[in-house]
Amino acid sequence: MKSEELRRLTASEPLTLEQEYVMQRSWQEDADKCTFIVLDAEKWQAQLGTSEESCMAGDVNLFLTDLGDPTLGEIEVMIAEPSCRGQGLGTEAVLMMMSYGVTKLGLTKFEAKIGQGNEPSIRMFRKLHFEQVAVSSVFQEVTLRLTMSEPERQWLLEQTSHVEEKPYRAGASEPC
Image (cartoon, rainbow, N blue to C red; front, side, top):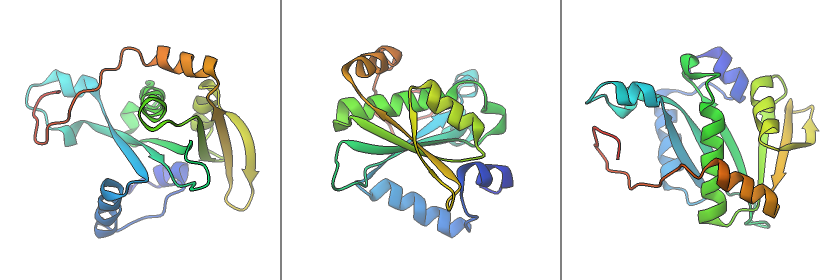
């Protein structure tokens, strides 16, 4: 998160390393957050013994913070590695997280809050059938929403039918 461009696109503030660690621990421990780490699969599969850390491209997050509506999840994605942008990793990660939300958590609605100047993310979410529902001039962001009708749910499950859930093995040096 040292990149000024990345902070602008994600509306993030600079954090110290200790603040980053605290935030990561809270994301791991809090029951209202789900995080998937996005790996560069080509890099991961190219060389046996490559560490996960060296293949990290970004992350996708799902926040379950609306106590009045447990079927709503706020979703966000960040492809931090510049060489991995524009290759569909963000789209694939969002689709997988939404599928997880629908099939494992019972979610039926998703919202994405995106900085007004982040045109690539806005285009991506619109491509995924999200519609703009609000604009905040104070926060300089747009809110996009997708309500999962049955046809939308079927479309999502078709888009992710190739995904296979596998257990994670800490310290694994090869894909699980």
